[in-house]
View 1 (cartoon, one colour):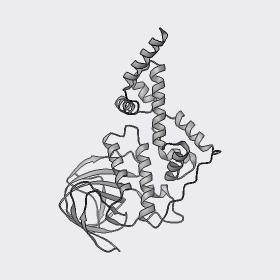
View 2 (view 1 turned 180 degrees about the horizontal axis):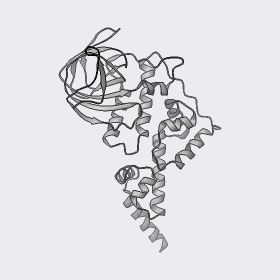
View 3 (view 1 turned 135 degrees about the vertical axis):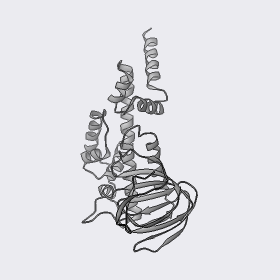
View 4 (view 1 turned 180 degrees about the vertical axis):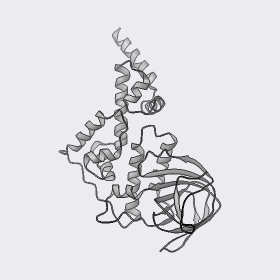
Length: 303
């Protein structure tokens, strides 16, 4: 099965998709600027190629003996161990050769995402540096968080993945390029932006909300906004919105006779099943059981 990730083959001068053997997981394409796949299959030799997007390859299987050479950099070789990752910058020609069975989690990030997180101070875009088989707990955790969200069908929408992707882009800029992201200012108690964002969230709770539009309201870069909001509100944007959805759902379950599917949509959940799964994880019971318990409590109080 072909991957959605493409490369430019410098030998044939053609745009080609990767052919990893089997793609066991792919995201739905709802996270702006980032894509995720899990590849499984035999390793192979790759002719000189260029990636259109920044690539991260994380080994989640057995160790693989690998050799890779980027144009303008010395050749790297060794054992690509489980738990390590290789960074393949966009636009940097490379060739590689591996032996063994490869099972990997692959992420691609658009250059535009890195520039949205920390706009360049002048012309050009963020330039990342190659890295081979390095241990990076932050990248590992972020990639697996995205994979878990993709497996679950992103039950709370795209905002969770957007937040993870923005943090990942900022991490790459900080640790794998000469550019540095800007420091985060401490929240100002007199800053009205937080209240405007809270009001916007509550007014728009019935539809998907993106990190980009919240950051635009605050007039901040994506990653700067995510860190600022967490300091100011005490929770990440994703967590804050999820709590607001659950709080509204609890109120509607006890104060209205609307159907569960209608309540799910009114609170911004994509479906009845996503609503039930998320509500049970957060509250401990299903929406149906929560409503039944509230009804029994009211009856007992009225007696």
